[in-house]
Length: 134
Image 1 (cartoon, rainbow, N blue to C red):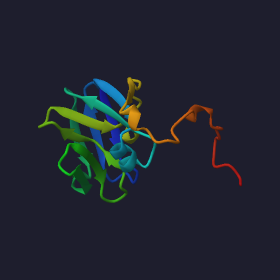
Image 2: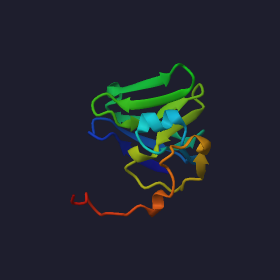
Image 3: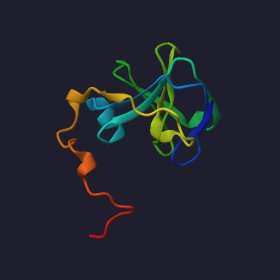
């Protein structure tokens, strides 16, 4: 399988060849901070290969306190991008940067005990097709 992805501004594009092993929604404080959301949504693969098509020179990787919380992003728009961790053994791909449909669904919530206090019953919140008036 070959998947395509990009950053928000389109300067960075890439392909992933292979399959994803796992798809987790992480609620840890670090993932919440670096996404600005309730959780990160990351795909993981120990066999897929990442190929940069454009803009690799516009990517930066941040390793929080060298503790293994790693985030790659576009230096132009700030969008999250794939990175390779664990001495090249693990490809981590933010699901939101994928342009292709992916054939794996989230397999679970991790670090759920760390979730934000407002992260409850979100599926019950009203749903709008666009920004609501008022």
